[in-house]
Image (tube, rainbow over all chains, first blue to last red; front, side, top):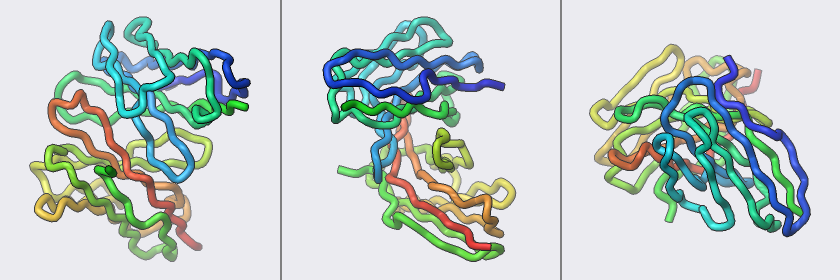
Length: 114
Length: 113
């Protein structure tokens, strides 16, 4: 059971470089989410996709773009990386559209921007 | 403005005793509450949840209590085991909010043998 798979696991970028973080889920879930976690902080929502073909901003969307490529895949792009975007990024997915269901998380991408 | 607060950054308990982790929230629209456990270098793992129509939910050694009037929930772990040592996050979502989760900052639980 792969669940939610994130690639890469680690990445170091220079300021101004661009990068796409990949996320794929094999649970046939409708909704997918991108979070970031900074030291001493909880997870904060960057963007989410409630269903295939839709995306919406979360709490901290500035500096990021997303693409819901298909039902399985949801990518996060940093167009011009900044040191403030150094963080651990988590992707999550959730099953049914209505009703209470937990989100399931990948193991994260650790991103450092110099 | 922190909508979900975990005021204890850390908690240490002896193996076999009860661990009680607390969480407060401010948004009265929250109707679904979850606890996640997180080990270093791994993603959060869902532990237990509770809907606002209930005041208690139990799953093995884990019980979550919800006090809506106080806007407070707690996670009880009985008995605590060394493998329970992890960071525990409280999270909440509001009905009609596309199930977006708002997380607390986490409590690091250490269970000593």
